[in-house]
Image 1 (spheres, protein in one colour):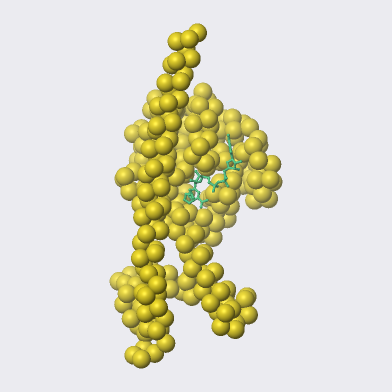
Image 2 (cartoon, rainbow, N blue to C red):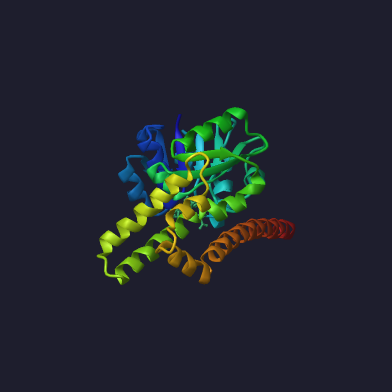
Length: 285
Ligand SMILES: NC(=O)C1=CN([C@@H]2O[C@H](COP(=O)(O)OP(=O)(O)OC[C@H]3O[C@@H](n4cnc5c(N)ncnc54)[C@H](O)[C@@H]3O)[C@@H](O)[C@H]2O)C=CC1
Ligand SMILES: O=C(O)[C@@H]1CCC=N1
């Protein structure tokens, strides 16, 4: 198996590092491309092969991960389309880019899978949901499941769920990092050294997440178990409620989901305008 990662930025590097770390693909079987020399140097440190040329990455590969930002997706798809064949599986990890958008720009019957994952893949604790395109086979789905299962939790779903998945787990690590940082700030405000406060905040999140993932657990029962009658915890939980903590998180997931839907629509609209501009230009000739 040979893997191309087109767009070796933060997320492209995260999955490359994850695949190598998990021993799923040897580093020299991965070739990562980006026009950014800084990103290319970071990818090279993982041990993977690197190139500025997307075609050089795609040509020898059979699994092609597209990890570019949505705004360059069209350019990249048109660039690689002439060399995509039945031997390739194209896996897009871009937020807000619909499967049909990718399929439209590649040869008919290209096997496409759309993934929404997250950066904790780097440490084997990713959360990934994927949906298959119209020509993708069961074996493609099994392969993608295998790839992302080595990087954490992974499940197949319908494409319609992926905007909400982006809201919860795609962008979710950012909310968790903000929470950890804020808890550490609180600790420092109350007199703890910064490094200890940060370690305590992160370890607490990790422990709470692990307990929540135990079979049969529910976060609100676990929360009840922390609060002793008349004790400290409920004073803190009361403050969280007073300041709208839960409301805040629900709204954050909602805003991210809405943004993902908007992004998909914006891409389809831009595509339509682009097609009309091309038609007009052709008519002028
Ligand atoms: N960062 C994250 O936590 C997650 C990101 N994603 C998705 O991954 C994709 C990449 O996001 P990031 O890694 O955060 O962005 P990034 O900006 O760090 O990486 C994008 C990379 O693509 C490169 N690039 C730009 N034009 C290119 C071209 N024509 N051909 C090849 N490479 C090109 C950039 O130079 C950069 O190296 C996005 O579509 C995003 O929605 C999905 C889930 C999580
Ligand atoms: O912010 C973004 O658009 C990407 C998608 C999910 C996480 N990062």
